[in-house]
Length: 571
Image 1 (cartoon, rainbow, N blue to C red):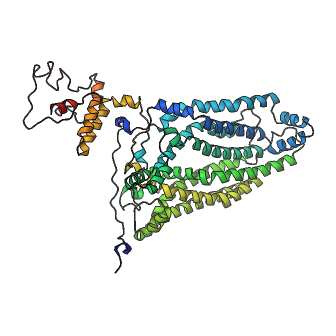
Image 2 (cartoon, rainbow, N blue to C red):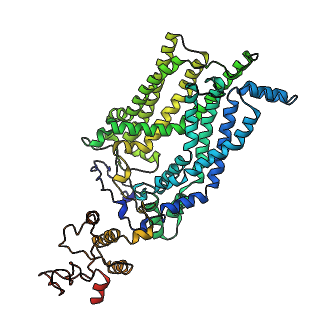
Image 3 (cartoon, helix red, strand yellow):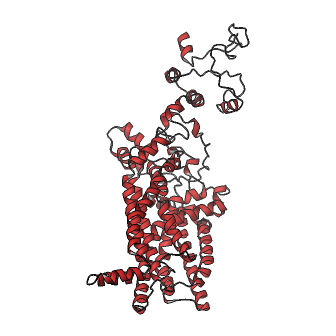
């Protein structure tokens, strides 16, 4: 006879659709559940630690400036530097022939990086608004919440260098006067290295503005360690629940529900494209930067040695013809459209795997999920294959069109072959990686719509004012009292402390909208302040209210609830 633990468990399938939870009002979150005192406090903390990301940004701006200066002709700069070891006149001649001046370079290297870093510093007051409204309970794990905080802060600080690198080729194409008179091999090589510098700078800045450092919360790694190794079972259980919550969005979705076909809707397709693009920044972009540096660097070397007698090396022809842009842009758009629909097509193609699913729940380990849910594994795999095939098809169409027009250059052919051999498989891997963590988002929506993680915080910072000012807000206090009463149990002492901390909140149930704290907004709009049953109040039968100053007679069947300081004293 087999022991109970060795018996196979029944399949956890045919689960009901997850129930969508209502979204809470952030302006009613009580002060104890808010992480930061205020947005101003967050700004002050960011300014105090800005020295770390500021040093990274300063170094990044110097790298970008060096790439811009040397990008006119990197090989010629290198050869001129070697020749300048014997005679400095060669370096001065190179500077003038490439369209620069010694005084201009000294001024640029002395002022531009510092001024650009100061621009990022000026954007720091905007950063708290990007994270203030975040609800930690709506994230499946503490690591995901802290990563989202760091990403949003990094996006604010990295905005200036990203915009500069993006706008530079556009300015060259529009003919803005500058040392780069065209997108030759040298400038394209510099842009490739600039992309790599931006990616590296993003990673370094993100490390310096981590959520534990900015918000003063416990790191996700420490919380996970506590949830696994702490000796106190209660502490371990609470830490484990804070570290990771159970995802309610089971896969595959029930047939006939909106989630079953959500991947083919515009919302699902756009979200899938965004997730795959974000994953491509990790899988495809670094490889593309490296390939660009290698291909355009060799092209610049060949161009320089073949035209070493030219008097103006800035007037060079671009290895990329305008026909490539005219053909490549529409083809890239069609490929992006196909990639956005790849998860939906994969869902349709994986229908035969539904019967093999033995557990629809979500597990943190992908190996475990793939073993118990072959349907999800098939959708993830097919999404990667479809994306890679679509990208390869787009490259093939571009190559055929360029060959028919006779506009393909050697650099173009090398780029197409390198893209087919290196970038296309990486795009497939990136698409699969995006769906491992984002397929449920595409089909259902955010995880926070269906669950609330057990965490002591529900908001990063108040939208207006401070936590102390929010504690005095009658609507917040009334909402907290209402929550305590709805939870059941004996919360008399908690309500006593709530009343003792400030005004007595007493709302007559007979008043219209008395059970809804939103009535306060309507009263304020009409110029009426909330009435808490003070002396002379219409709610207590005061001298100005009904009853002529005598106590109001309670209707039959009603009794007082010890819901305030006064009520408890009477009891």
